[in-house]
Image (cartoon, rainbow, N blue to C red; front, side, top):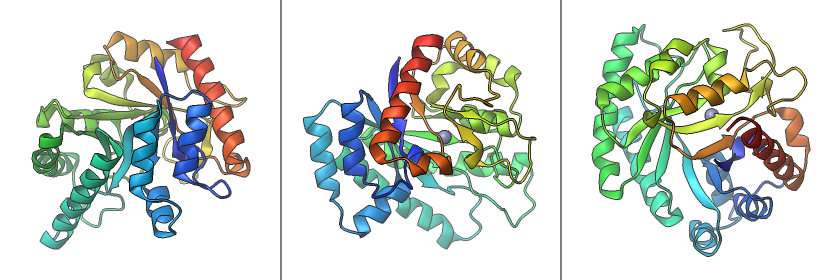
Amino acid sequence: MKIGFNEGCNRFCENHSVLEDLALCEKYGFDYIDVQSECLDRELAAGKYTLEELGEFFRTHKIKMLSYNALIFFNMKQTQEEKDAVMAQLDEIIRRCQILDCKMIVVVPSMDLQVHASIDDIRKDAVAVLKEMVKKVEPHGIKLSIEFCGAPSMSINRFEDAYAIVQEVNHPLVGVTLDQYHFHAMASGWDALEKADGKKIFVWHLNGMENMPCGAAYNNDEKRLWPGEPGDCLDHKRYADTLKKIGFDGGVCTIEVFRPDYYKLSNEENIKKAAEVTRAHVEKYC
Ligand code: ZN
């Protein structure tokens, strides 16, 4: 199993830079990186580097970009103008992916819906939007991976709902991101994961978390931990064994935490620690 680094881990560390992350991830042995769009947008605007410089780094080093993380709030748009804006965002991300040699885009559901949509309404809408999106990514062989998010306000917040959408789209370029925190935080069903086709899971986000009540407002991304830290409540063996059993062949285990305490580390300390815990995790469970 290869190991990946998601910049959620260090996005608010002092003097964060995607270009520096590439060098540090390479130095500490990560095979892949998920680049966070908010880092990229912020730092491109500040003139820290160009997309072409990042692309050049990837072409001249071993590290690869696993995913563009992310196209956010892709679904349940109510006006044509909003729908067009999502597709325009996708066009721009595809342009960037070509420069960065990236073959996957993580898509994140919309939150705080104003309409009282049922799970069926949300599924139908997401299927239609993803079918449109596939037409755009297909010529480039870029995958789309839905990341359901384990918060009450998110429109797709359990594994089974995301998986039903992927099944209905039924396209080899459309799959699910399985983030352990998100899975546990809204009590996704292990029965659903156990019955799923592992090949439809494109990305595995590894993290631990504090034992917080399902759906509590304070049960948010900040409660994530490095896996195996004191207080981590997740059943890591079960995640790893289940993924193996259902045939997950994404080939990469990617660490993603968003813990404010970890943002106090330097970029280098953060990435060094992330590499240690991810490598230890893979050796123990994969
Ligand atoms: Zn994630």
